[in-house]
Amino acid sequence: MQVKKFEAPTLQEALDHVKRELGPEAIILQTKTHKRGFGLMSKGSVEITAAVSERAITRKRVTESKLPDPVRERVDQLPASAQAKVYEKGMDSHLRSALQKSGGDRVELGRGEASRRQMAPSAGAIAAGSPKIVLPGMEGYRGLNQQASGIQGRPTVSREVRYADMDASAGDSALRGEVDELKRMLHELKQAQEEAVSQVQAGASVGARSALSGSLTTGALQDIFEQLTLGGLEKRIALNVVRKVQFELGEHAESSDAVMDAAAQEIMRMVGVQNPLAALQSRVSSGASAPTVMALVGPTGVGKTTTLAKIAAEASMRRGLKVGLINLDSYRVAAFDQLATYARLLGVPFRSANSAEDLRAAIADFQNLDLVLLDTTGRSPKDPDSLRELNQLLGELPEVRSFLVVSATTRDTELLETAQRFSHFRPEGLVFSKLDEASVYGSIVNLAGRTKLPLCFFTTGQRVPEDLEEATPERLASLVLDLH
Image (cartoon, rainbow, N blue to C red):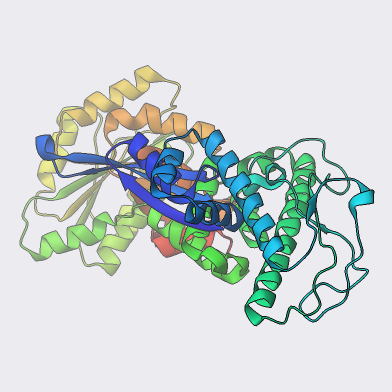
């Protein structure tokens, strides 16, 4: 199979390129739109990734090599179905001509057994008594992507080519080479039809999986697709990953290790990461005076308070930043006591605020610090009034940067709903907690891809600060592919 990319200003022009170069039997694997430049000077284009079987491209090239230029130009303008018929007839004509040149005194196309004659043995011919050579009808395996339903047993033969009384004295080496080449082509064509039948029969048993991954050409690609979906990745995203791997590796996609490595690289490219502490450290080194104010927002029960304590410990103990903590959770007395305890253990200042005025005063008290962390009240995504109240409170301080904390144990539908409800806070990144309690991690890629937000931190337990990890592409790929 040949796989190529085509790019043009419009979709129709790109499709015309595909049809002209790969022929009417090409399979469209993927389409992308690109935009280069900015504003009024920007230009768009469409990129198509297409594939075609070696047999289909051979039929096209053989036929076109026999056609005069004016006729070939007219064929290029035909609809795809008409083009396919021209190439099929052209290939049949080429095979007839090759057989006639081989020195046989009779060449017949048909089904009747009466037309069959024994072949005499010779050095350049097929041995006497060998079975008839079958040329399958081109429709039986066109591109391997027009699969007929209900095929059972061996495929029905639509044409037969029979040799008769081949001249044993034909010792011309060029002639023998042409006959050998013809035998090889016939063998490959027969194999292609048998492979198409086996794919149809396999497709009947795998159902939906075949519909999604039928274009995946090796067992290694099928295996990685299944692993990604079982690991929680959306089928759409998993198929996109595997198709890119298939395109990049080409004939090397047979190797499971190569496919695994390429899939890991693709996952690493899919999602952005950002460590706000590293950026803050650079800012402080450059002489910034005003503190960075970070608020952790998110639903109840995801571990915001513990996560905030871990970030505070990472910033103060490992990065040498001056940190202050502010509690905005007036709903839970335990949250106040817990954060106050963490502040005392870390040796950092702590304040509590119940209103915008209190919060503004607390931040003013911390003007000589590098980082101020706000612990907000957990709000249910299904309580819009509560979310609006917190959003108004934080909205009065434009310097506050919000980060959304969600649990890795939450289902995709709830994660997406949470992200949509908390989008009013304009979060700058995602923090995934409770990775130690999750069994699959594809939801991390799913949510990051849908929200376009970078990943900042992962939390993997209750220990402070040991169970806080910087989100990295390598770590994400190892989680999703179960390499950890």
